[in-house]
Amino acid sequence: MYPPINQLIIKQVSLSYENWLSTLQKTLPERPQYSVVNGTIEIGQVLGEFLGVPIDIDEYYDQLFEYTSSKDFNFQLLNEESLDKTINNQFFQSIQRVININLEQKLSVNRFTAFLDGEQLLLKSKVPAIHRKIREAMIAALELFAAKEQDGLKNPELRRILVDLVKWSMNHLQPALETADPQNEMPKFLWYGDVKKSHQYFLFYLIKLGCDVVAFHPEGKDVLAGFLAEPIFIHRYPKQMPPEPFPNEKRSRKTTVAYRASKEIETILNQEGSGLYKPWQLREYTPSSLTLKTTYDELFILGKEVAMVRPDFEVANGQVKVPSIFAKVQGVSRNRKEYWERFHSLVQLENTLLIRKLPFTYSSSNDFRFHYRNALGKDGSINTEKIMQAHYWPYAFLPTGLQAGIANAIKRVCDKLYLKSLPTESIEDCKIYQFTQAMFMPKPLIQLLERFDYSQYVPKLVIFNNESTGTLSRSDASLLILLNQFGIDIVIYNPAGHNDVENYLDHSLFDIHWLDEVVFNFEYKETSIFKKGLFQGILKNLRGD
Image 1 (cartoon, rainbow, N blue to C red):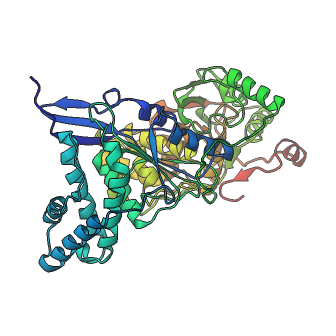
Image 2: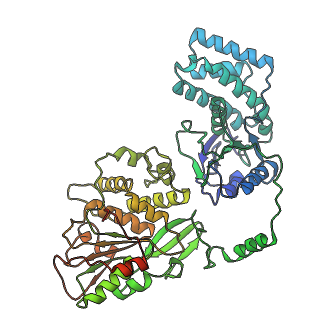
Image 3: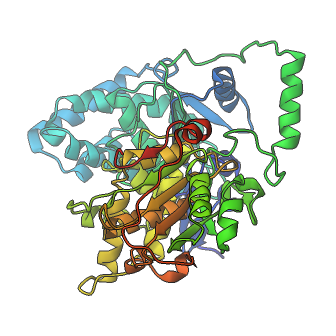
């Protein structure tokens, strides 16, 4: 005979935009984190926020209607309009009695909760684990209030918060708990629109109880900001707009024959692995780099090719593997005309950034040691969701897919350390340095990443280091690793054949191509005005040349 289940432990499930809905629709035993051992059950909880709106507003509101009206999702809608604000006067008086006792005796959170229970203000459940969790969730909500609000449980706002928690629990949570079962399914709630403080405490209470909670805010406001210790999944849509009334029916739209036909063609052609991708189809995907081993001649052949026709380009499961180039050209060809023609053919390609003055970054003096350690997950590697939601994250203005790509590149360069450690530097110190430098990417390089449509032309960073305009720094090399892991092409020219990037990175990370001669103080040769205007018009130099 199995022991009764009396203890419920809740673990947040790791989510992405691609899998959140399918995870939500799974029963609890089908989700990650589920286990039953010695009377304790552990379940995986779906928590997420969807901030802003997509390009297609009609589809957005149709989906919201579908989520709350279809039994396939089983969401209960919560917003300012849908909340039932009625409360039995007996409950109101009971709350006031507990408040008065607290003012007289200064109750602890546990005793305060016990008095609430004694006044029949806490919900009951026939499932022992849920019954116990209801009390634990109320204790967590009161502890949060005591910590956040001035004067703790003596704060005059406590009465209003408690009244709202009790009435919404009775009106919305109690019916859902009648069929709740931690061995199958817990209640699901969808919040929409603006929140007041009471709303936030109620959502926190639901989360602590083990309910699935997702929030949608078209204007991009984080409705749970400051209420959860652990970061949750957040998806940011590209646009923001004031919330419209929650839809009570699907929007009526008549589509043209041409529109329907184009969508059907897109469905057929633009699938993962089809080899045909429309512009920006992969913008929500996470890029990673596969560095190609090339010959000198192949630099100028592959460099002109779009990513999706390069060897081993791959798209699957929300990931896109970008075959990229990381090479160094040592010395100069005897045929100077050919040397410069090949060089200019590279820098005149679209989305190429030319650097002629070094260093092109600066070494940050900020101490990110605490931020780095706080960003680590239980497995000892960086948790990308944590850093994307951190206050110091400098890339929050970028599209969410691009943010995720940068965060994952940071995770890879710290997990597998490519930067050489200094003699007095520990492995952790080196990782902290890499982590810190990644937070200070110069604006032109950010814009280079923004222009990267992963299936199309690969942006390039070309460095011409003739050693008369500075030297490559360790912070430069640190950023080169990050760009390489993201999938950017990098080519370094050093006419004198001297070490620069080799001082900081292992030779195995990039190809080295030796040309015929080494030349010192080799002057840079501009392309002709005619060719410059014809092929590119605007070649950007990171240092403003």
